[in-house]
Length: 268
Length: 212
Image (cartoon, rainbow over all chains, first blue to last red; front, side):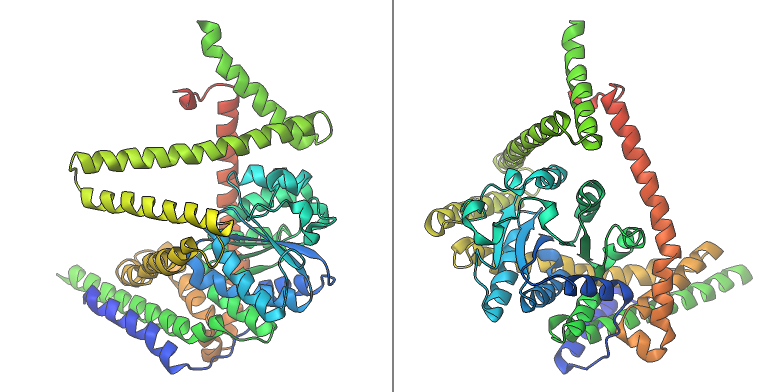
């Protein structure tokens, strides 16, 4: 049996869109890596400054933007300050959008409660440079204001002054953060990534090189449950569930037809 | 002549040696030298981005002028580049930064680039589903193991898995925590050893392709 790919495409479109329209509620179970990430951020003292690196672009926004929002809500609700940066040029506008959205909700002010360092090319070099002095890599914020003039930067010189770094990534930037910021400077890291990347980062989690891992839209939904603020990720769970069921059903059909075909060939 | 050939190799060797020493001995003078070299790399990276833009535009301008295959797409790329670059410069002057949410650059980003990139990424769902149906077959014992593990993770990682059977998410977590992680760790070690080997070859001058 050979299902025409147009039928498969049509099934995918229906299975994704219908649950988004009907809005079916599904229970979300929190997995241990996401619980760890939440606990580590929840332990931070109010007034602490965390570094958030939005190392992703628009293509992976559906998975990573909801977790960016959820994490920012958690941080701002606990009066934790945020420094935003990105290793991707187009990751800065995404982080800026998220910060503006959540900062307005929690009445946080730019320069006092958060700052946007911006983008700097060089990845590993930037990470190592920040280990000695953040101002070596980012002398000014994204708008050209010297970091000295931002109250949020008072007493923040390098990783020693940042209790936790959060890397939300769609590529291999986490490898660099772990290799240089964690291994060399002992920076504690929490990671968020696309679902397809999550398996790559389990060794870091197991070795304690990252202290929490939020994987894909499911991870974001789990985080939304932990902060008791269900939003986009939670509402996307039925679509994702039915999509996975469809893939599974198609794999089963494909294998049944494969075995029937093989038996037929052997007999003939 | 021999000195002319060996000089870049000596620069590479001593520079990489300083970087390595700075990594293991972050104290003065190695730490300071390393930090200075890293700032230099940041500056050079900026110029590398300019070279990339130059190379990209040259290639596509050549294709348009010679009416090569797909020249219309190249024309779209050039026009879009000029348009977005213009918006970035204008926004930078008017709003202080191109990333101001009120700027025309961010408008183009939000309503142009984001939907386009999201569309490209969304197409993956269609291709992956079609590919899973056609390629994911239990042709051998190894393939069967892979298939069963993948099926358990596919269903166990979404909420409906837990609704079908409460143990499914636990099994999916176990697969990710142990067999999958062990395999990934092996791959990671292999990649890292390969990277160390290649770095050493460049450092001691065996690998010289970067000089050409």
